[in-house]
Length: 154
Image (cartoon, rainbow, N blue to C red; front, top):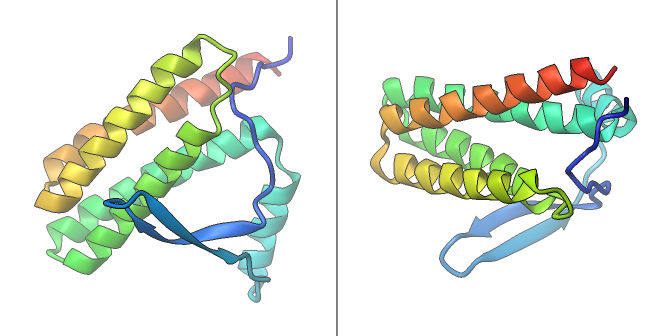
């Protein structure tokens, strides 16, 4: 049984560089070629991944950046905390905009992503690790559920 992918993906040619949440404006720049071997490996991994694997990678990145945000916040590194939370929000936004609205579960996920994004904003404004831990719990649950679904459909 093939897994129904509830996400619509297309390969980006432009990436966001600056997000102004007040004006809802995003500045884009053209994707650059990677230089290091690790970057080339990651790019190759992404370009050859199935849509289901791409979604899993996004969840993995979300968990990673939220954990970084918690660690940086505990170390009182305001700039790195801010950057990690912004990266987390970018992933949540990517998950939200790529949802395929033809599936009923998409509506619930969209609401969940909206809630997570608002909580990440709250955490960033207040530099609150407890809020980050709350969102981390949701992100880990979504990641683990997605991994289990991928395993069951193979």
